Length: 388
Image 1 (cartoon, rainbow, N blue to C red):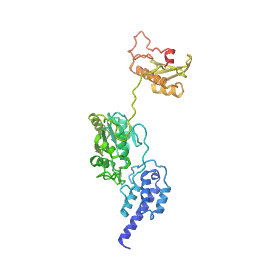
Image 2 (spheres, rainbow, N blue to C red):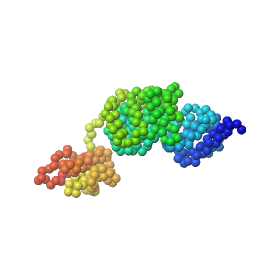
Image 3 (spheres, rainbow, N blue to C red):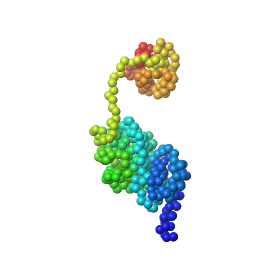
Image 4 (tube, rainbow, N blue to C red):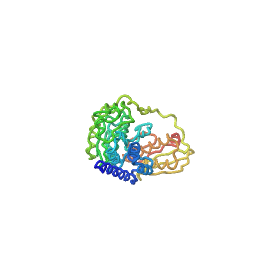
């Protein structure tokens, strides 16, 4: 047996063993890496040699939950690398091909992110460092709009671009965290930087990208061009320190240009509605609520009355949100306009308790009453509350 044949046999055994490792791993059964790798091998000239292994692998498939977990060892990716040593595979082999369902509003596509504020100018991508998402979201630096992780250089990049350009306020994208994990071989940060610098070729492959499958197949060249023109990408890969990243975000926000004029190509503009003054309020069939701050006990008191003036329930609590939640849970508020009114009054009463100022329902906050007054605030009459 020649050395070449031995090498082919060795590579083939390694490929089967690696594919079997993915088949045996429950985490792979719902992962896009596994699904896409099996599909790519089924379409390759190795399908007959791998027939049994591929059939067993496909039998373990479960509903796809994620495109990539960013594992330190990715057996599906390793299997494709071994297959590429034996036969020629398309550049897009193993790329996710399913187009995610678009949603109305912003962000239009699902992903691993947290939305902070639509009108802010800075987006943050923590790449493989998922833990950074929650840490930075809790820090809530000024100027932060959205923060999320990204593990793949194809579908992940596509979703990031679409979600960023769909918000005309976003003008800066900060890359931070770990750009690759172990042998997985996905370099989304490097890939995105290559896209910004070089763009894509006529096949949708990102020019100069180092990742294994840097193909953008589900977004238009016009959308890519819009992203490259209007979004500045800051490279802070490898940085994990929250305080340092907060400083970068706040500095970038301070120098960011204003919103992009006009909607990006192929995106739906966000619905904006000018608020109108309320019309005549209608009685809530459930009754009305009288709000009073009890200064002696440092409690908010909400008295619920039937519309005929009969007191039914008294809700007491330290915080407006607790009292409001209890009123709603007990079906004591059934109209949205009435609930909004009571919520506002509870918030004003809570502020009056905290600041030591006067609160009178249906009136603007005032200073503390004279010493001759009792310190208790007057409640609105049944007619006033009943009309709210």
